[in-house]
Each structure stands twice: as structure tokens, then as C-alpha cells.
Amino acid sequence: MQPSFAKKYINVYLGLGSNQGDRAANLETAAALISRLIGKVAKQSHVYETQPWGNQDQEAFLNKVIMVNTTLDPRGLLDAVNKIEREMGRTRKEKWGPRIIDVDILFYGKRIIRDKGLEIPHPELHKRAFVLVPLMEIAPDLEHPVLKKPIDELYMACDDQSEVVML
Image (cartoon, rainbow, N blue to C red; front, side, top):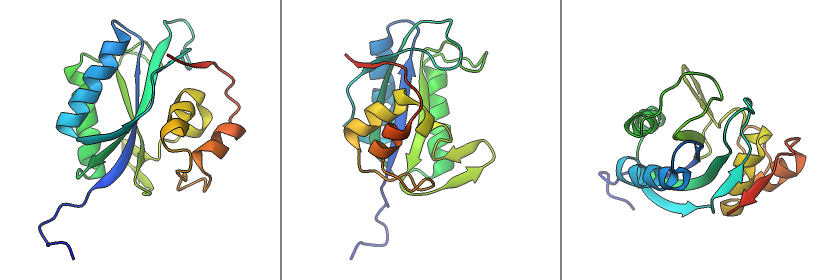
């Protein structure tokens, strides 16, 4: 039996992407800030180079997915993610525009959250190969709590044919 003061840890999956500046260093910096502000990085995928989503007229992205053990509640997690993006110099000018860093909350345990400004699981993750490929690397059997399918099945059914190249 756990003492009543023990914190409850939850596994969250975060998608990281960068297409400005030193993209690899940006991913490393974000992972270090996540470790400091959110929790222990328990798993991380390789880094993948991918074509931009939405607005094609920009540089290619580097992407990866990490699993973090955290005690933060969903809103606290979102606040920490936003703080990391701000500290790294992210400005939100245009949807799907270039960015020094992008940190998306993909999953928060098995919870389904639909709140103002916060939707978990990420509503578009099952449509994006650049998320599914690295997620499949570290959690192929993870079941999407809304779609009730594991990540590898979501990838096989995904219509996104863009290249996702492991570096």
C-alpha cells in the first residue's frame, strides 16, 4: 500500500518538432526542459526528418516522440509545454508555419480530455505519419482511447503518405 503522500505518476506522450535553426539541438533542448519542468523522460524515439504538414513552403522538420512520467495534471502539463515553447523562442504567427519548437501533447495516460484549449488525445495524431512512426517505435501496442486501436494499426490505416526518414 502506498503512503497517502505518494505522488501519482502518469505516462504522457509528447511529440516534438523543429524546422528552424539547429533542429537537432532544438529537440535536445526541449527534451532537457521537459525533463526539468514536466518529469522523467522514460522513452524516446529516434529523430526523423519529415516534410512539413499543412504549409508545404518551408524547411523540413525533425520530429521525435517521448514518453514522460509526470505528476502534473493535464492543465499543468499544458502550461509547462507552453512555457517550454516560449522559453525556446516560439512565436505563433501562422497555423502550420515554421517553428523553432513544437511540443504537442499526444496522450495523457488513457484519459480523454475535451476542455477549452486542451484536447487529449491530440485530435489529429492518427492522420499524421510524422507522429505515428516515432510513436510506433516506442509504443506500438499503445491503444488510442477514443479510436480503440493500437498505434501500429492506426499507422497501417493512415492515409498520410509523406516520407518519415529515420536519421
